[in-house]
Image 1 (cartoon, rainbow, N blue to C red):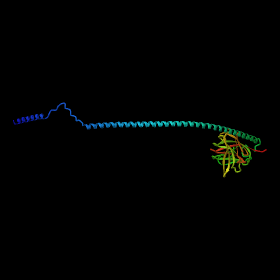
Image 2: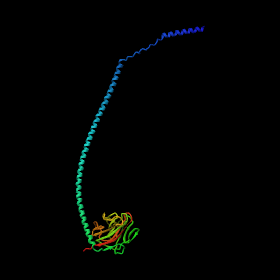
Image 3: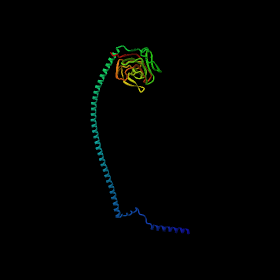
Image 4: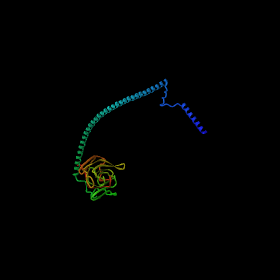
Amino acid sequence: MLNTESQQTLLQVDTATDKQDQIKSPRPTWPPPARPRKRRSMPKLISSLVAIILCVFLVLSALVLLLFDTTTHYRASLKHLATVEVQQTRSVQTTAQAKVRGTAQYFQNAQAQIEATATAQGNQAAVATQIATDATATATASENLYQTWTTSKAAIDDTMADNSGTSKWDSGSRDANTGCAFTGNAYHASEAQIAYLQPCIGQATNVSELAYQADVTILKGNQGQAGLLFRVDSTNSAYYFFHVGSDGTYALDLYNLYNGATTGSTLLRGSSPTINSGFNQMNQLMVLADQDHLTILANDHYLGTVVDNSLHSGKIGVAVIDNGTPVDAAFTNVKVWKYEQK
């Protein structure tokens, strides 16, 4: 019983407590009421407006400065571009004027060159005509001399089959494939050392003014030379040498003793289609020595005349030159006419 009563008493106390709480806590309303706004004071409003105005002013100032800077640079660019165009125009005008002056100068130079060429050609034509006239006169005089000398009996007429004649030709050799020898019914001169000349001399001959003729055949020797010696001195060191090559070239050289050594110099040279080129091809060579006038002929064709008084008289002979490979040449039908003043 006591417990029941106690529970009832506690229940009543709780109920009374709840009622008191309901009386103390008011019930919320719905919808909730709006919160009251706080009003700003006038100084703060003015400050905000001033800040906004300053910001707008700063933005506008920046825009104005940017526009001014852009305009200034644009005008400067236009001015620079205009200046460049003016300079380019002046440069083009200057270049055009220079080209005009250069073209004019070119035509002036061309005209002067044409006139100079015409003058030179005229002079050359006159010189060539004179040279041709002189050459014709010299060839005619040489031909007359040849006909005059060769109508008489030859002082030397040797087939060169052996050494039985009166000329006493050199015979023998110190080295293989080099020297002078009679073989195969011909007189041979050979040289095996490159850039060397092998002379073969008629030791019993001595002629001053003469017509000297021989048949010459190069048998071997790349670029070899073969021909006639005349006015050979007593030491066999100085002489004239008229020679032809297997390539159709010819030359007249002077060999002389200088400081104890024999040196050569060319007096006349050239090439001629009248010279039979190649190996085993015979060429009839002739020398006309009339005082200081020396004339050379090949196969009855005039090649040239030179004036030289280095040597006046001497022996006759033949020779070969090795210009590449060992050379060998055969010489036959040697004839010498001496000039006899009537």
